[in-house]
Each structure stands twice: as structure tokens, then as C-alpha cells.
Length: 401
Image 1: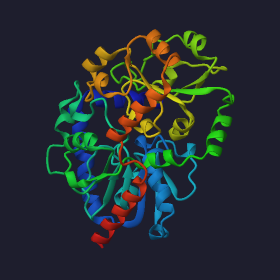
Image 2 (image 1 turned 120 degrees about the vertical axis):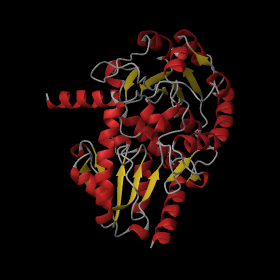
Image 3 (image 1 turned 90 degrees about the horizontal axis):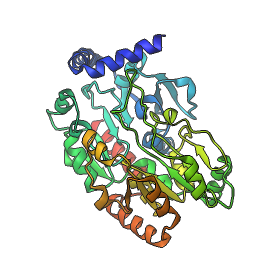
């Protein structure tokens, strides 16, 4: 009952931005006073997807810091919504949005997150806090104040002093220009280094891929299709839950593809429950599988719609397909930066049948060639991001001493 009340309260606040803005101002004011008196410690606090995950670029940076001698005596803290669900090899855990969390945040010398670690409050970085914001993918769809239907609170949020202190990662000039505007950032705050989470994509061994296939119970004679649709935040009920179900017939997919493929469905966390997939010899629901890179590494083909997974997966230079069954609606409701039909290295299918036919009759070499060109345009710096980010972090720490 308490969880339902909390969820309804959060939904209410999101729908009433002026009330939410007042709450933010009060919390920000208290926090900015506290940060003056709370001493900074040799401590790094990490947060991934608002505390839901122990993965993505924050984890990649965490792993890099654990291997660096300069951080041997530092304290590592992970902020989670449910700390008991996650095991970390080193450091401490804290429950997000508690007083303890805010103390850990304001007393840390370094913040590392992929979607705004300070919960959107906008604390001042008094005391030379170093923030690393990797974000979580190159935006094909509009974000922040660029979204077609966005509250004025979000549109006005970043109008003010240009942010030159935060270390931000960019995959190419394409996303740097978008992020520079959205986050009101300076050009020199960006590292053109790709995303830390993608370093590992180029390092999987054949043995590791075999182990992943074994865990997923994939027969040796089957190739793997990874279907990773994004969610539609405008399709939600009064409890804030999505009710999206892609218009597909898994029976039809099975009839046409099961002789050669196994289908892995990696739905957005807000979608997987709504799809109601039941595992069988053809399809597996891997929405809760902890490491997306593992799924990229073993997959032979990717299907998505408006997700940044295209950019990351292109690093592997494998065939990709687009199933954008609601393209016109999505462009109207959310909006897109990229003209998918011109830029994606594949046909944009709005019908299920044409998508399946395209997969069955694909020209593999031609698809690989297109993916390679897409990779070189949108992710040309992949492979050494963790090193670049930590080197910049160390440089700034020396500057602030």
C-alpha cells in the first residue's frame, strides 16, 4: 500500500512541475548550505539509471578505478534503490534518496553517473566536486527540453551559467552537439572518447561468448537475434506504468525464423512486464539479464526502433534491422533527431511481414558493410573510453589540490 501511495505521489509531482520545482528549490537550498560545511573525502559515489542497476558506464569506470593505484585508498559507494538486490566486489552500498545518500553524495570528491546523479536537484559543486556524467547513449530520439511534449520546467532547467566542470562523454560530433545544447555545457567539457561501457565490446573472447550462450541455453547450431525495443513514455496508465505491447505475432516469428535463429527479447525495463513473454525453444526474455554487453557480444543480428543501441551495436559491425511500426506517432509524440530512413544502415520497416522477409533474405556481407560505415560515422572513438575518463579525472584532482 505504501509503495502505491509513493508511486501516485511521484506521478502527481511529475504532472505538476511547479510544485516539483518548489520542492527542488527547497532541497537544493538545504543541500548547498550543507555542502559548505561537509568536508570532502577521498570517495567516489556511483549511480546507474537512477539506482536501478549495477552496470553501464558507471560500472566500467568503477572497474577501471579499482585497477588504478591512484585510487587504492579511496572509498567507493554505490547508490541503489534496493541495495539488497546488488552485490558489489568492493566498497559500500547506500539506499538512494535517503539522508545517508545525500550525505555520501555531498561528502564525495567524485560523482559518477549516467543519468544525473544528484536526482535532478542541481546541487552546487562547492568544494570542487568532480562530476562524470557519461549519459547512457547517443540520442536518436529527442531528450530533455527538445522533446515535442515537455514541461516548461524542463525546458528552462538548464538556462544559466554554462557547465564547464562536469566531465561528459561523447561518441561523435553528432551527440556532442546535442548534449552541449541540452545540458548547457561548454565544448571543452566533453571527451571525444565514446562511452566507457563500450570498451568491453571489443574484448570478448570466443570462450566468453561460448559461456554466455551456454548460460542462455542457446543451441550450437542456432544464430541469435537480439530484439531491443525502446519504450514509449507517453503510453502509461494513471499509476505511471507502461502498457506498450509491440504488435507482433511471436508465432509468425517462430514459423519463419526458428529453423536458424533463437530470439532474445531485451525490452526496456518499463516494457518487459507488459509484453508477457514466455520462454520456449525459440524466444527468451532477457530483459532482466544483468549485462547488455553480453547480449551484444553473442548476438548475430540486432532489431530495434528508436534506441541508441544501434550506435553501440554498430561497433561490432553486424547486421541491424529497424522495426518502427509506430514511426509517425512516435515522431509526433516524442520526436526524433535522426532521419532514420536516411541514416540507419538498414530499411525502416513499419510492417512485421516486411521485417521478417528482410531478415530471412538478408545479404549478410552487404549488411556488415553498411554497419561498418555507420560505426565509423557515429562511434569512431570506441575502445579506450575508461582510460580517457579516469586520466581526465586524475588531472582535475591534481588541479584542485
